[in-house]
Amino acid sequence: MLPAADSGERDSRRDPHSPANAEHPLAIVGLALFAGTICVSIFTAQIGFYLAFATQAFAWVRRRVPFVRTPLDPFLLAYVAAEVVSCVFSQDRLQNLHHMKRLILPAMFYVAAHAVRTERGLAWVIGPFLAIANLLSGIGIVRYLSGPAGLEHRVRFWQHVLTTSDLLMMADLLALGLLLRVRDRRIRGIAAVSLLLITSCLVFTYTRSAWFGLLAGAMVMLAFVRPRLIAVAAVGVVILMALAPAAVRDRMLSAVNPRHPGNAERVNMWRAGFGIVRDYPWTGIGDIGTELFYVRYAPNPTRELAGHLHSNLVMLAVTLGIPGLIVVLVLFVRILLMLITCVRDPGGGITGAVPLGALGAYVGFQVVGLFEWNFGDAEIALTMWLLIGLALAVQRMKSTTDPARA
Image (cartoon, rainbow, N blue to C red; front, side, top):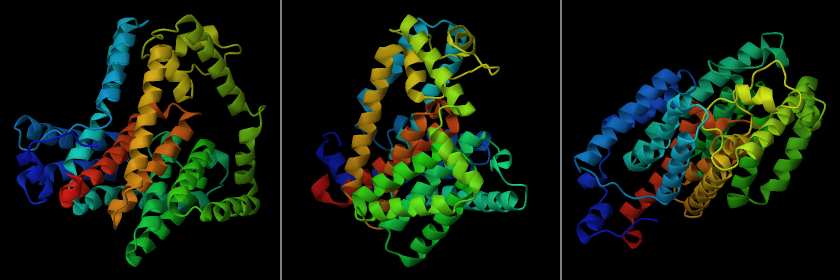
């Protein structure tokens, strides 16, 4: 997992109190600010991200801490290359250059993986995320139950409802990781309350893709730590669906109805995407909006000008071409393998819970991405990169405390 190092660097990694392994308070504050405000304000969250990034980058430049290579480096470089090539041949280079800021988002992975070096620092980052998710979930539940209810009055925060539901899904799976891996009764109790609040609020968002993502992520997590509970959980889901309000049950069942307007619209978008890929197979149209292309290629264009095509796979093929799609798919697989490695090497307390929650959240993210362009949503992508980075940070923490790993 870690590259070879000279004896001095190996010795510093073994000592958690060495300067190379010291956490910078500003970096932790920045990550905590991001995690605590991402559900409320992308502006404030970005301030936290840039604060953490600037602090960590300064430490790297001054060589106060070593920059340790990660298993994702060559795959992320390939992704950057695919974006650059696509930009060169883009159908709108100016807009493409603007969208190249998307390449900043994976920096969150590196910042989290390097900045968080202790269990206390880990708690300072995930604590605000779960605390605000719980607070907003409670408010959302009260507002929903005190109103007319139903799909038209679904819960949403300050973002689009799809962004709200994805963030809730990831917070929910992180809480599940705490419940499954932490032995401290107080933390388990908090995690159980979090699951109840966040899951209830997620139900009231009426977002089907996030529901499926939550189920998939939870099942994968159970498969690693409590496989015998998978059947129990499946039965529980069926019972809950039978007891759910008619509006929630109808919303869930509508996912398999090809005549549902939302489903028909997505199929229309995907057909347009296939047509675009057929004409631009090698480098795509560039990382740009698809409004004009949707009107041209959609069999039955709707009144909505589709700026994206509601699927990571379709959008990556459309914007980067088939080679670019393959590059990103390989990156996705490598991330999954890295997270599985982190989960199979459990630790105690939250150091065992966070990698498990990150794996569940990543699986949920990918399931949602079959139906949404969440890879292109800054709030969701940054949060996902944060969790992936924290999982790797846990691995690095173990290498500093166990000489046999160094």
